[in-house]
Amino acid sequence: MTLTAHLWQSTLCTAAAAIVVLMLRRAPARYRHAVWMLAAAKFLVPFALLFATGAAFSAWLAPAELPLARWIDRSLPFFTLRSGTSDLWTLSRSVDLIWPALIVVWMVGAAALVTWRVRQWRATVMLVQQATPLNSGREAEALARTIRKSTCGRAIDLYQGDSALEPGIVGVLTPAIVWPAGLSERLTDDELEAVLAHEVAHVKRQDNLLAWLQIAAETLFWFYPLTWWLGTRIVNERERACDEEVVDMGTDKESYASGILKVCNFCLRAPAVFVSGVGGSNLAQRIERILTGNPRPSRARAARVTGLCFGLAMIVTPLTLGALGATSTEAQREVYSTKQAGVRGPTLVKETKPGYPPEAMHARIEGIVKLEAVVLANGKVGDVKITQSLDKEFGLDDRAIATIKKWEFEPGTKDGKAVPVRVEIEMSFRLK
Image (cartoon, rainbow, N blue to C red; front, side, top):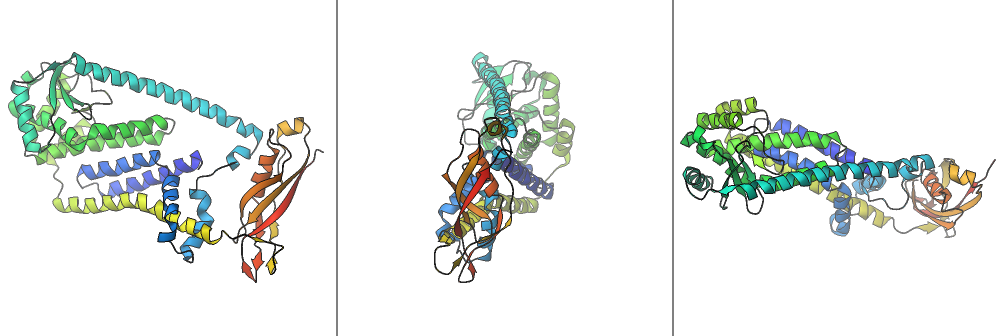
């Protein structure tokens, strides 16, 4: 599939996610966070892969005679993995030259972003290496109580680190809290436990692991502003989800809000991108929601169903379309020849003239390309292959294939019924 198709499909899914999030605006934040994460995952998983998976089970899932299957057959170019020559690559030789340049630009941008991420990761590792373990004391006791309340079920190490850095969770498999030196003296016991509860909530929710998926989407599609906008939405809902988790643990709301404000006043720097901290999102809105927000259980149940339906739709829809499309294609696999009895050949109703690639023109290459094409039962051109080549180096063969695929026919018939018919075509390239 083409990059443009993947981007606009992902954009469409993000727009659908935005509508779902709007419907869930009064529901718990964890459901909105899950919806945004599904939208981010769509950038990493092309629909064509799910479409191809569905095609593998087409015989079980989709009878060929369904009207929907016939409709999908006409829509295949939207979903299928395209091989061979793409129209985008054969419009003209001058356009062809743009794509290698764009690929180089993408590689340079991605490499720069990866280098930046690696430096951030190394700085994160240094945080732990330079920190001092806190195995006892007021902070360790508060963390132990918090883990019991949260039913996190995971061991979390505690380190004392840079006093300028916000508290944050480091690591995925072996999570650790890096706690700024000197912060505890500014917090009451309730505030200390509330701030630690926020970090434990990050561990319980596997937020550091999910952050890697978000980072992967932003790195691969760094040129697409929507991925960065999506990342901001993910971080906002992630922090709100942790706030709600802390409040649900029975934490005093005023102590929690006061603790967050004291942390933000004390610490000068937010944690690195690989670290889930206590800051982030719109602080004023967060504090207001902590003190006044209280999602209803009924809304949580409705949000769970809505989010589940959205996730299933993103997976089941391309799988089903793949099954329907493949079954329709299977049904039309038998291709007829005009030499067979009762077969009438297709009639050309719309012809597109091929352009002459400048390089071939300068090389003064002219002649005939012979092709064999399958005109489908809907009048569109299916498979095309070269039977007599004229030029592969300067693109005349590719231009001939791309041009033929734009032609439209009145389909051929067998006994009065439209069927796929194989035809032979000659395309002439002559210099004036």
